[in-house]
Image (cartoon, rainbow, N blue to C red; front, side, top):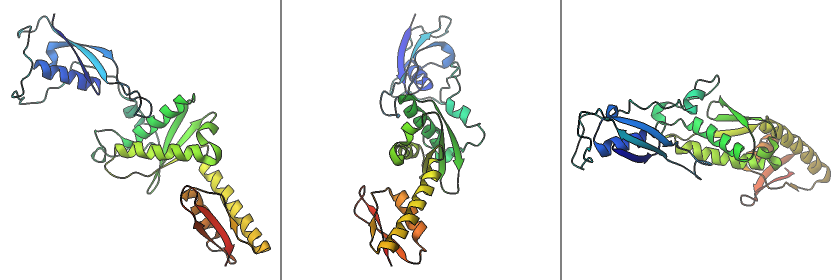
Length: 259
């Protein structure tokens, strides 16, 4: 009995590769999945292609030893893998969840939803840290916020949100790999962003009062561009103090001084 083992990015791709090598249609083969595909950690490490075994059916009317397809062979119509049943992907399931945001198919690459890829990336990272999380999507005017819910999220947030900021940067890279248009994704966990904003605004008020009292400028610790923006915005209309930034990232700091 004629068999062939082939690989592909997905199960459908692997089967299609085998059909094209044999130059047969899907109804003439039996398919056995040997290895399911895996996206790997972060979509970068441990990526595993699908592997299937094709067996030519004994009742096929054609020759039991089909010739491999030559380079000059062409098909009038593409071969459809109708005989293979593949489980519905997590992305297609989650796209029907309430509150999710779907990128239109004409803006995605390879037919993959950038937001779903970003959600899966976050889930994979959390699982590698021993955490089980859920990610909900909130669409804003010009951004998409991915809100992480679960237990022990302090590991994901990190000291003053540094880990969350790093994960947000990587998540944007992943999402934009699958989008024709630039996406701006904000990552949040347990409303950390709002709590951090209030903390920084309170800090700005206290330090502004200190500058007025001592008549000496105050230099804050290094902050991310987003956090520096919060300080500037809070004090931009202050009657007695002003702010500016100095230094180079990642050591750029906000300075509060008298006007």
